[in-house]
Figure (cartoon, rainbow, N blue to C red):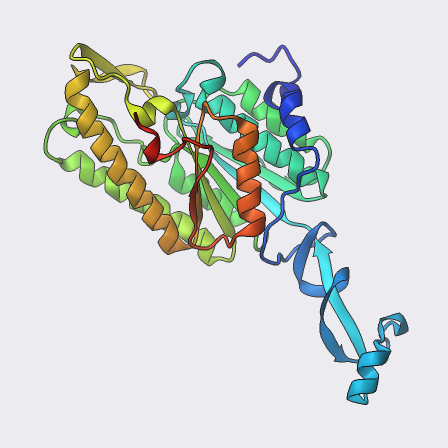
Length: 348
């Protein structure tokens, strides 16, 4: 990406900022934060929403006495309200070569930057802390992992995407381990990736048009290890959202002519699969379909929210849909394919 323009303006155009102007990043369940924000806390405190009653003890603020309830119960009681607390948002982003696919506005890395920057903007606007960690080139970039609610966090997040080119493998195991070690209690963790090749394994001709071989078993084990590590974050009390970002070509495989194609592994920038487009298409789509169903089922079992986005859909619609799901539906065991024609049903 070019860095000639302001990175925030580059990733958040005026039309998108206008669409999000009155929106909030809200999570349906209570949160356990450390600072005042706009989310309900697990702890009682100062707020407007009624929580419950408890018996008065010396030292309580007399203004919190509920005289009507005291008359009914024949004892002094105080009203407890929901404390308005901070939610910590941590963004874990796949910066591997696979995220470099697509031209112009359909580029997956560019769209990942737009989604991450927009979510950062929403969180900061309501006083929430944001952390970012990226995995690419086989390394973990955790310089922004420590969550911060400072005003300059928006620019530093945007600059990370604008100045960085995705490439190489995403080291998922150390990436998630690094994040897990520094997450605040009960964080909202959003993972942005295509989730197509988490093991970083090389493609081979055996994967198209032939029986499953050793590579397929290794791929599945890598997939399962990734879901297991994400499930550990969920088990630790964090809410985990997987944003699966795909290009339309990856869903539809539009090369259905008999001419010979060479498919390039974007992580190593060299052709690794060669064959007839028509011959490869059916096998590719069948394998993709099975992988997407497997991912959906794994997220459902693990109590993680899976949102599928396509890089040529309008980002405003994708974000508004995601915000609605977070605010109005339980995170547990929900899979949603947003953005109109996004998802497995979009193939023509």
